[in-house]
Length: 140
Length: 289
Image (cartoon, rainbow over the protein chains, first blue to last red):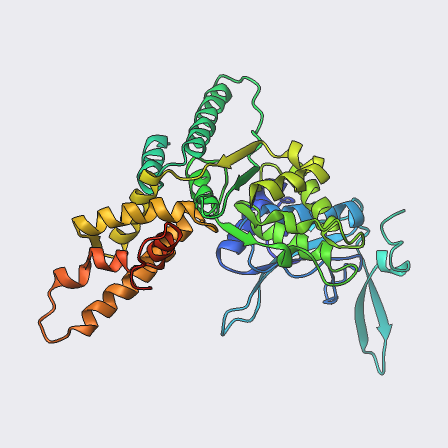
């Protein structure tokens, strides 16, 4: 099951050329671009790990594309996302975030039902991939 | 694409520097031919644009390097045309493991533009074998090769020390496509530079002052620590001081625009350069500057 989160996630995967122009757009807006990766696809997982430091004061997307290529070389079997952070007053938050890399095989999510007091049922989702320990989830 | 106006502007704003202008013209022509070849579906390779500027102090290395980004941008060689100007401090870290991220960050910032490394020979310190400069050099070399289309590196420094630097880092010499040597300016060129500088600041020489300044250049050139255009700029700064002093000393009249703009022969002749020259030739020294 294809994970959809962030911008463009209902579109086909972006090509490198498309990623480059999105990154260039961020830079022209003056946002700091970050590369993050994770192998826990749960939508509530906000703790993605950063690849290097946030990249401030860049003018051209080439530097970020190089970092993305480096990150893919190491964590090519995980989710990698690119986010643009707007540091300007009043925003001070992430303005854009999109997935730039995903595992070849995404096993998707299971639904868990829990019978609670009375006739209540509680639901939760869990990712099949996350049942393995971190680092072994997609690299089989 | 308009190459001609770019080159014309260069001719207008930079005096002398024939080898530099020739090389820029060559690069521009090469680009044009590459474009044509591309249209004819012939094999094209991206030319190596890394440059090294060597020359004596004050020959315009830094000025040209800062311009080069704009030129290359207009010629379509670099995408953004900004300059990141760095020295050793910006690339080399203070402790183990600090250098690589620092250098890489600078390189990323410079991508799409020009990385200008002033006094590049300071990167390499042979007397200290544990110096982190070597690490910065290695990363630099690797990026210069791998990211040739994203980054133009310009090294600048004095001729003899750059020569030593290249000898101990042969990888650098071969990765740099253009070694440009900046010649010393002739006296006529120095005068033209002086007049350009004065024009920019809305001053002008009186005919006599101009003559005196020609003499000044001839004398100053023979004295030690002469650093071409930089010496001229410093001399003009001092001449402006003396001109102001002369005007303030005699404030009982109405100053006209002509007064505050023109530089008289006395302002030039009061320079220490002349008194020193006179002492050396055994003549009576003029008033000290």
